[in-house]
Image 1 (cartoon, rainbow, N blue to C red):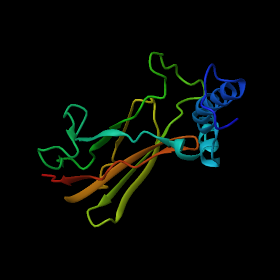
Image 2: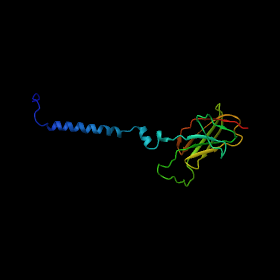
Image 3: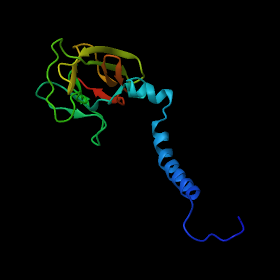
Image 4: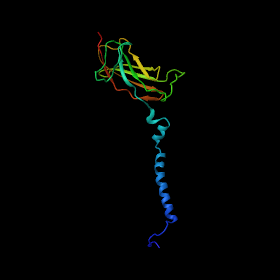
Length: 178
């Protein structure tokens, strides 16, 4: 019976095997997509890797409200501050979803911004945590007398509750007061 060549239409068993193979082929990618690890589940629940906010961008320094900003890491070289109280600033990623208008929080601003200023050798001069008035920009004017002539560096990060961004890269700058 098994030695005879197949002639005619396939039997029910052949159709059942073909259907089972087709169904298994379609179900395998679906089951792989549905399987999750503990890390994937934590990420979906708001934990894990998504606890980082975007790193603040465009770190810059200004000598005063009308002086304009010098960008950190530009081809022109390191920024030079000619006053003892330059303003440090960075652009923050907006928390409002694209296409929506961000409304002020009735409890006040939500984001905390941490600025660090070190001497070139790494000795910390200032660590200041502020609350941003907007979710778009953060600025901090160093108090007069904190910096003398010399080489410094600064960086910034933003916190929104338990969610924290990475630090920006260090921005090297020079203070040359007259």
